[in-house]
Length: 325
Ligand SMILES: [Zn+2]
Image (cartoon, rainbow, N blue to C red; front, side, top):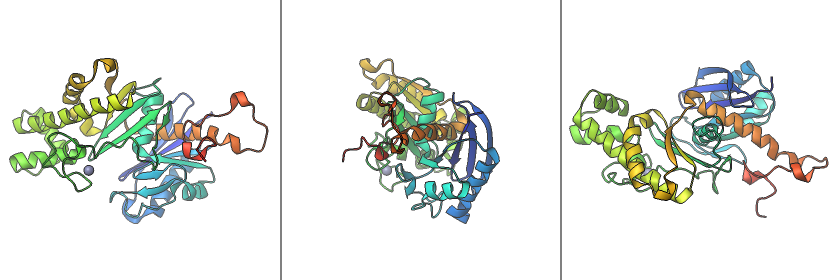
């Protein structure tokens, strides 16, 4: 069976999946990420899962942090993976498992996975927003992740947002979208309003149970997110917007109505849909990145190349011959 391995390295769990040519998950395995023991232990865990599942060809990895897509080195990471910044993930993992490794940011990988085989299947232009503890975004254009100049394109956490004035963002400033539309943001807003110190998940649960303050906090967050997404659709012109993450589903009804109200008529067919791949989204997208990256490597081979089959620079523009010299 021609299956590609994708690995999701997160702050708490590592999930590896064998993915078929149509995006189906054929087998998977997971382990706790030994984050506190440092990058070597994290990569050893990923390599163990890779050996257990097998697969053929390059291995794709979706990992937390800002990743340099050309080198697979972590440019920036949060405290969820101590010491992760600066780790040459692609090179170090390739050495451990003896296969080429392609690395991207986990939210970028999820966006690619949903675009290829999930909620936005068949759409080449997709914006994904992931609302968990924090807020992440990924942008797929022409069927490939758009990385921007340094791997950070599609991030929307630090866009200015309505109703975020008193809320501190993960970056330490106030007034940003993540400050209001994230699990942490829900918890902070609820504490400001009620004095109660609970998690964002608990705020969502209290809303379902009829807590009026929790309902207002969720409505405010969903409204801010929906308006911002409508603006991003005007800027980026995707075919579909995918909302992922645990807090994302809690915010979906408010986000959807604010998005629909704010969206321009020309974008009336750009739907906002919940993510469909669940826990496997990052691994599926990472596998897809490995499949397409394999194609972008062909021009480096010494043999003759049929011009009609010449690979286009769709996935990792930093590494192909079409990069401006
Ligand atoms: Zn910020």
